[in-house]
Length: 125
Image (cartoon, rainbow, N blue to C red; front, side):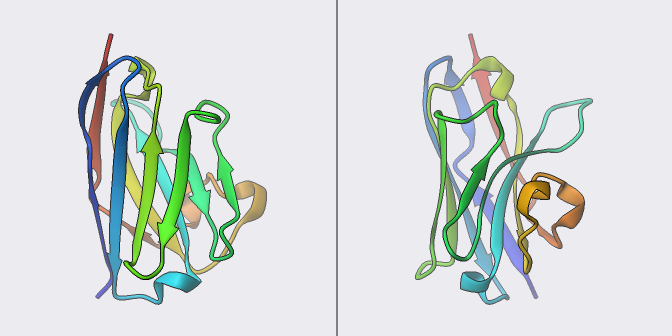
């Protein structure tokens, strides 16, 4: 059974930092693309960042230079380091995994097979 478990969310003020973790089990972690998505109330789920098995990364324009995605294959864990947080970053953050890389379409949540339950990030001004 595949499981993705996010943690590390919380409430911070503008300019603060958080580091999200996603522990994955039940699949060959090193062979999978890992993505982070967020979804604010009333809005669609959007891609934040992705890391491929070869450690190639892509980011949404809104987070470039502020967020960093990484992975530790020995721990079956993906991370999202979030710095210089803004109120507009407030959302539920989800980890997702898929066997394939989708190039420029990486941010489409419809391509990802496996999902976690999410962790809430709240940034107050």
